[in-house]
Amino acid sequence: MNRLLSAVAVSCLFAMHWCIAEAETDDQVAARNDVIDFAGAFQNDGFKIRDGNYCGKVSMDQSAVVAVNLYNGNAYWFTASTGKKAEKLKVSVFDEAGKPVSYEPYQSGTRAAAGFSPEASGVYYVKVALENGQPATFCLIYSYK
Amino acid sequence: MGTETIEGHSRRDKRNFSGNWDAALKVVAATGSPGTGEAGSTPLLYSCQSCSLTGSIKLERDASGSRLVRGHTRYFGDWTWDLQLINCDHMPLLQKWLWLSIIASIPTVSAMAQQQPARDKPLSAAELKSVVSIDALTVPTPGEFFAAIEKGGKPNWTSEYRPPVSIRSADRAQMALNLGTLIADGYIAVEAQDGQQVKNIGKDVLALAKKLSVSQTVLARGDSITRFAEDNAWDQLNEELEATQNEVKKALEENRDIDLITLVSVGGWIRGTEVVTGLVIQNYNADNAKLLRQPALVAFLKNKLALLPDKLEKDPLVQKVVRELNDIQRLVSFAPDHVPTVDEVKELNAASAKLTKEIGVSE
Image 1 (cartoon, chains in turn brown, orange):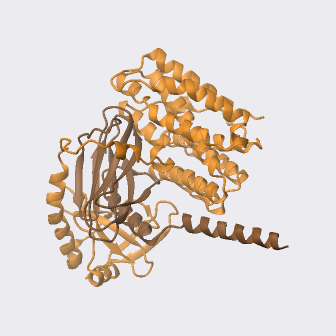
Image 2 (cartoon, rainbow over the protein chains, first blue to last red):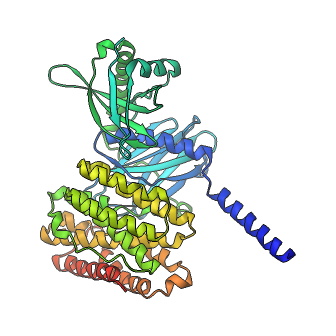
Image 3 (cartoon, chains in turn yellow, orange):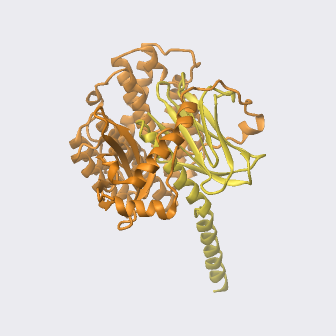
């Protein structure tokens, strides 16, 4: 019986841990809401916002790099926001070898974006960096047309 | 102050609402926080107190000098377009905010007009090592693939239709793979602007989703798909399909069926590749052929398949998919400056079509 109870307790703890690990933080929710608002501006120009997003943490000495697979002929905007704090974010784009590519930058405090039209299909890297401010949670989404 | 009515609906649930500008302006005045000057489109946030909706609007002018305000509403992340004729003279506060927005946007717009030469440092080895690859962003949607091929002219989308697939299989791996291919079919029907086909595919997608025991929220998407198809709301359908796919994946994750998520992505990509290669063959040109270069994407999918648990890994269909993805990987792995020949495109088309067929065959 004790063994059974222990097993149940361990299972409950595991389930709780799983739920906590999966739960979104307030910072993530705020960052995601803000970046969706921000990306809405690109919809005015016919860009479609992808439904997926990536939320992570950045600090001045730790940026985040996300791999994306892009198609030549399409135009893309990568947008990121921390949502509520007064950091200075930067979004930049790199080719499959990690070399910087030419892109249209946009930066406004907690929000940053990079517009890019690839000449070759394939994998690219989108880097979200914090140029100034305290470590923060950010959310990255992209739109295409 | 006027009492113009704001009317609109959100993209996904077509929730009708109305509010008046007085109410909206009171919120702007109270919070003092309309968004201004963002990313060249100068959205101005407004909010309706009676229904709690927020949205943004953009000032434009027509030839007669009237002020047209393009607005879109937002409700739980859903957006829509509604062109609204607004008499700004009746709304002094709004007018003030609009002009402030325009002024604020000028430097933004001009800054964005030019693509800057690359001045960033290359990614370091540590950064390359820490690259995050996630299904939600790393795997492009069939819609992105299809958007790219439309640049060369309107393809004959209906030529890429296929007969309905059997959804009777009880094999969960096959159901997940089939779900991916069906969602890609949905994108094709949207591109073809074929409402009936969208509805048919929507029903199949939801039937499969139900068999995979996904949550009720996913099933509710079926109504939206039908409504949008009836209204010929193609842009909304495009988003709805991706949202449906993401909700299925989220529900699978919640059901601890996380491994099936990879199979949904794989199915969608294979069917998308079959369709795009078919269209490239019909209207061969270098730009279209270069779209097929996706070595890292196939590697990503293969890596995810390699992590499947034993039970799924030993599934005969999954084993077949893994084997045939090796061939497909070879065909999509070429140098950035290489243009695949017609024969190479045909080979890739044959390989992806064969695999799509195998996924769709009932046990």
